[in-house]
Image (tube, rainbow, N blue to C red; front, side, top):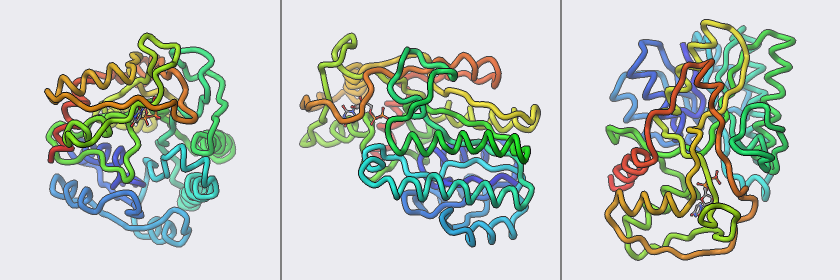
Length: 326
Ligand code: UDP
């Protein structure tokens, strides 16, 4: 049985959906529902039934009950807080949940001899890019508590492998975008801080101005470059990672991106085209902590995991817009 923590959230739910549809493995979703949605769980259950447990990683007893009651043999771990700015203002919240919560999970896995985990990591582990595209050997100097918690967990996973043989695949996501192509689930954050949902919210409401942060970067049009990977492609990367763990029983880390960067203005252009709407835009000063350019060198994932990003930015914007309209 596969335990999916944070399976009611944006990325976790899309991976759960893929596993429900493409495998016959038993699944248990564990989510505090603080940021995940029960409506998402219900939607997923209509695809194929699975177990759902509401609980919190910060509470070791919730984990004890979980591992006692279910026969878990691998874990995909998404549950985490994800807002960079908030992590700077309130690091305690991030270290308690993303770090201590994850240590609780790893220790419970050891107690029950569960030795396989796919961990949701991030390009934020690299910090300010020294070169682009970024490969997995790029220096790791995260510049905010969010990125630090993810990097610390990666370090702990190394130590737990050496000492206890716990095998992990860490997937370092770049910018994730889009929704289920059949429009059953999608992205719903409160507050929403991500680029594409914010542009599309302005497309859906003509009163709402889209705020662009910074047009004085040294890029082709002055706005930040990011690598937008489609959510369904990202979900496939987790399936590949699980297969790799089962077959090779080896720990490793992989960038998950597309090798292509788009500027904020280019993304805005795609959104206007896909929605056929003229969207109101206001240029603001730079947002704190935004690196100029982040693009993944994903060669390793292609070679070792046999994974490929196949959907386009257009696909991501189209599916995200369908979801927002719904
Ligand atoms: N961005 C923007 N307006 C928004 C949200 C984001 O101009 O309402 C810019 C942001 O400054 C960054 C890029 O879009 O350059 C991607 O930001 P996002 O928050 O989606 O992802 P991040 O790269 O910060 O993880």
